[in-house]
Length: 363
Image (tube, rainbow, N blue to C red; front, side, top):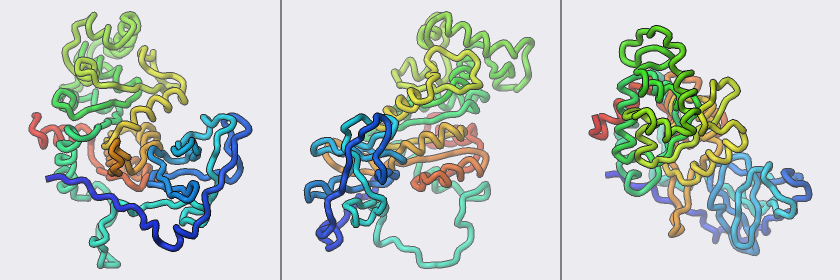
């Protein structure tokens, strides 16, 4: 049975916490510009001493400022700071300036490493992922009833008939609470639904179809004529695929654009910062995030995903972040960016989703 790791808050009776000063702050004087010496957040729980009391910033993300709003602490991107915002200052994180970063809250103190040297400590194509899959199956079953599962997907899924079918089954079984992707995933998935191709190749046989290079352009054009993806699905009687299942099951999705996009589809957000804001609103609800074969979307999501979530009853629980790609460079890139709370799996994502769907008894 799956059990959430227990969160252990710092022992604030320790001398370093008791004797620590209140966190200092300074008001914003220029919109979108933080004061000098602002404190920048991480993905870990961070506490700030305000009026003698240590307070946790309940919603966080990397590389943002902390603003005092009465009894509440809000983590805000510097570009969104307003004149008069009280921004916390300080660059130390061990209580010296009334700031404490708590990176070990979910660690079990009874689990300690004994060997100083051991083989195969990295994550690569040679790694055994059997236990990771078993843990993921149990996690998804738990989150289906108790959490919020967000999928971040690259277009590779739409190039394979079985992968599309597996992801559709995941949506219909309730294992998808949100989807984030780019123009390509949605376009080629809808192309697969209408023409059984992706970029003009049959999604089962991989044979290029006559004039197939027009297929995705025709799909974009028809969706734009319909005015939206849901209207296109109704207008053309689409009855399969990832976007179809999201629309029919009321699963929200955020599609963010790229300068190389064709079209794009009507729902694609072309402004990068509007797209980031929409993505963060979806991330704020997530308790498990699975990023699949999309390096830039994965890094963006990882940077805005904290390692914890504070529930309505005040309970602090972990946020699980998975990144899956056939390229070791891609999954390690997220770790290099500082998102140390990620579980990485190096494999073909089309194979990954088939294993997950079968492991959950959906295929």
